[in-house]
Amino acid sequence: MWKASLVAIVVYLAGDALLDRLLEPLGLGYLHAAGALFAGMLAGGYLAGRGFVPVALAITLAFSALTYGIVATLRDQPVLELIGAQHPMVSVGSFAGAVLGAWAGMRLRRTRAPQA
Image 1 (cartoon, rainbow, N blue to C red):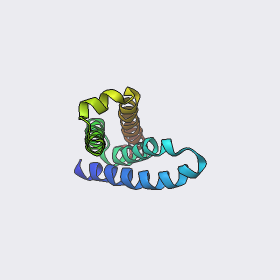
Image 2: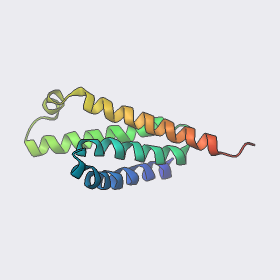
Image 3: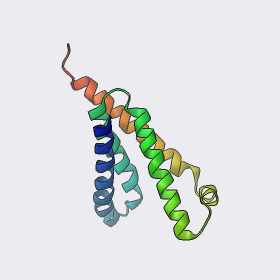
């Protein structure tokens, strides 16, 4: 599970940087985080197979908490106030992307696994 989690994080970070560079010139820069999250969880879900959805949610929660913490510190604003000011769909979208990516990765692995 650690290998799958590490792969999910690395693919997410690399995908975030790559997709930002690719989508920004097209005016679609707002999609980079969702695409990177989906790619990371798809890779992690593929490696982990069953049971990856809870790990995907934990990774997403950790990234969300880190992001809110950093942004709140930079704005010199309490974290709860920042969370209250943000649209709730930002966080819901991250969790939906994590679940969808992990589920798709698990399904992909299950369909490609040799039958015993």
